[in-house]
Length: 538
Image 1 (tube, rainbow, N blue to C red):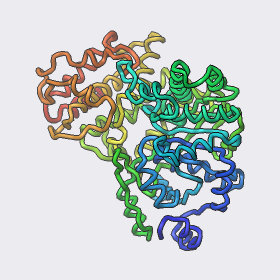
Image 2: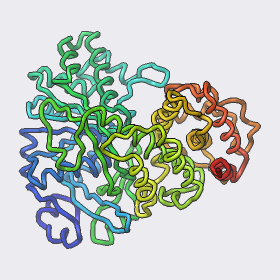
Image 3: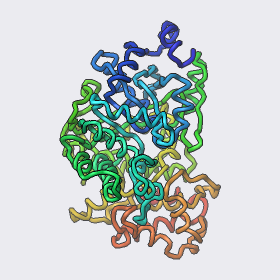
Image 4: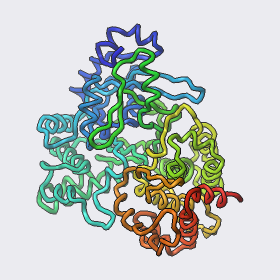
């Protein structure tokens, strides 16, 4: 069986006999309707979109609630469109990894169209403009990662591509935020119909980050004479252009060879994954865990799909913010980051195997239950304690989920300020004793040790991609992984950077603890293991 429209439509019995759930709607009719009456555009065509957001659209289409699908736009890695979408007719084979070792397989066909958000491609550019002129367009959603919204370097200067975009105007937009601003300008010039602009990325205040970035580009264009004050008023008015906040939670690891092999054994052809020119790991299938959460602020000025009928929580901004803080600063993301850097140092390639390590388990349990829960805010719609219970007892130990700590260690510099800095700030504001924190300083010290690119056995390792990777490593120059005497204060300027950590940690007692833990980790082979075991012994 090959994943394409002809096979799914004309060979449905074979797919069903193989235990694969198929779309229960007319795919051709949905795609035709989506061309003339587009309602939902999504930027960021990677795995979490295909496996999670795509499944939301599928549920609504299967039940006859929606008639149109999602138009997927890739803003960064165009190979995804050329190598994964087009060859498979925009279909995805979604494979849920159940904790009991079984899998649930479903063909997702909710993507109506796949485009490159590339203004140097005239065909793509004109099609996007056509979509944005449509009064029927209700929402734009995003999974482009937090760095997709960033316009500046850590020193506060504009990224060169953003600086050029601001000077050259909407017609030459290249950065994702510039392209979105240019498309909103197209909508404004075609009647200023309302629309919701919805970040679904895994970061705090994601709607605010998206709004700030789009407004910054648009304001620069106004100042440079490209757009009017009326356009700024349009995108600043949330009764016309809203930027709802959201919380998303779904683990979608890189496609794993074991999953591909199981599919091939069952007769599925051409399931090989690719690594794109921009280092995206992607395949015709998505492997993912079953648990999933999406909480969305219900602010849609042009209406919206019936998302609540597909399991999405629709609520107010305050509840979204509390839910997001619960997950990102306490119940999942900090645990993931802490165990990922230590997992890499200790030679693990699977998260589930880490959860068989008593020291790692103590690290994440203390981080969540002892250090995080005392300062978390209960959002009301989800229980923080129950959420951590599910994470620690079911999700992380799921031995059938092929998640890799090296994936989670990606872009750590973009995460630590929220995942650890927010808890640290909560301790400071509430007057709690920072000396009681152990797992947080361990996690931060472990990240520094990981950046030395040598594991606990003294073997060279590859540090996961990170926009500050080379900058951080350059500041650690001179430090030798097995020689504490090689340390001469290199951590101080790193931890003084509040833009990375959310607070100048050198002004707190935590810095002394981080420095102490880091020095312990430099004592040769096995030092990282001894550090974890000793620091968490209590």
